[in-house]
Each structure stands twice: as structure tokens, then as C-alpha cells.
Image (tube, rainbow, N blue to C red; front, top):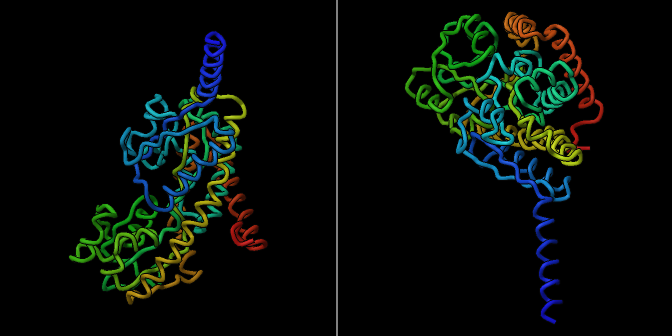
Length: 348
């Protein structure tokens, strides 16, 4: 009997070991906190990948820059400090130049449309896949900060001409376009903008609706102009290529499929957050201004030189920048048409 029991215990142990060996735990490096719409979407991604892999993939997400800060995320993932993580393209303008297309000041203000267009381009373009492979990276999925708008104190932007002479906190190509339109740019983080607006160091601050409300800037602004211009969308999930390549085909597909679902998940979350933020501003007495189409066209024109600069930068990096831009614009148009015809996925 003793021998039989020993055999049963051994068999049980080996079965358990086999299950343990079938599971792969991936380390995810995230510089942001575990709260907000993007964090919720990230958690959805890891849970979905686990589900699609039949439990073979597990995740250990390190939040708040525990493994690396945002400015070190690219090397952190490429060098294997984490198996995968969130990379923000603006910190790596040379290495992630292709991804930077999603930050351009195009007529691209819809969060879901922008994410779907960016995801399809990043997922299916051979040039981009090759450039990422050279960095030892694989693209998995994309996020967005959503549309760029601007809040002001003791001022209101109702036209492009109204920007001239204002003290503005702006970043990226959008900030450069503001400057070209006559704004006096003030270097300041979005987290300091509340104090800057309150003290008069700033007249206006570029931002996003949900962030404006979350940072309580509605307490110190009088007007909030919906620019209907573009968004900052070059941030998403990439994976160490060596770590990706050793996974089974089904595990790889689980990661890719989970990443492909992010636009629908974050699109719904961030749209709801932005709508709620607008209502919060209105309730606080902030005038919400819709920039007319003709005035938006002036912003798009002001941003055009920076789009062309991206084309040149991409081409200098060995990519066909002009073709990539045309493809991206066509994808934006494709998903704008889908929204017009069918609505968003979560409303169908």
C-alpha cells in the first residue's frame, strides 16, 4: 500500500509540475499608476491575453515606474528588464519615429478612430515591423490620450486668431503650431498648469478633457475650447522580441488578439470619461466652446509644416514617410466612415 501511495503522490506531483511549467509569467513595466481609463484598459489586456491563452500566460504588472520610468521604457523592454511594457513615442522620437505618426496634428480628433487607424498601421505594415524588430521589439497594441483641447483663464479662444499674444502651455507639434500662431509659450508640465493658470503665469493650457477635470483645472479656467484638431496617440504596448519569439504560436496570437481589442475597450472608457469631464466643466461655470470648422482648418494648416517634418524624419530613418502618411490618412478616413455608418462598437 505504501508503494502505491508513493506512486500516486509522485504522479500528482508530476502533474502539478507539468501544469506549472505550462504557465508563462510575463513581467509588464508600466510607468503610470494603476488608476484611470488607460490602467483599466491595460488590466483588460492582461486578463484577455490570459483568457485567450487558456491560462498559459500570466502577468506580473509593475506599476508606477517600479521597473523603469517612462523615459527608459524603450530600453527597459528591448533589453529584457521587462518582457513587455508601455512605450510613449515622444520620449523616443528617433527610435519610434514610425509610431510618432499618431501624434501628428492631422484632422484626427476621435479617440476610437485614431486608435483603430494607428493599430492597423502598426500591426500590418512590414516597414514598421522591421524597424521595431531592429530594436528587438514587437508591437502589440495602442492607447491614446484622446483629443487635444485648450482651457483658458480670463481669455477665450473662438478662432485661430485669438491664440495670438496668449501665454500658453503646449507640447509637441501642437505647441509649436500655437507658437506659430502667435502664442507666447511657457514651459510647464500639465501637473503644474493649475498653479500657472491660477497665478497668471499662464493664460491657457493644452490638455485633454478627462485630464483637465481630473487635475481640477475647471476650478481656475473660464473657458474650454474644443479644438477638434488631433490627438496624442503614439503610446502603446510593445514586447521584447526575444521573449515573444520563444512563446508558442497560440500564446503569441493571444497577445496579438488582446492588443487588437484595446481600441474598443479604451475607446469606450475614454469617451465616457471625456463626456463626464465636459459636464463637470459646464457645472462649474466654464464656457465650453466648439471651434468652427473654418477655424479648425487654420489649425490644421498651422500644423502642416510639422507633418512634413515628420515625413522627412521618417524617410531619413529608412522608411517611406510619404507612403506611410497616405496610408494613415486613408485608415483615419476608413474608420471615420465606419463610425458614421455603424456607430461605435459599444453602441451597436
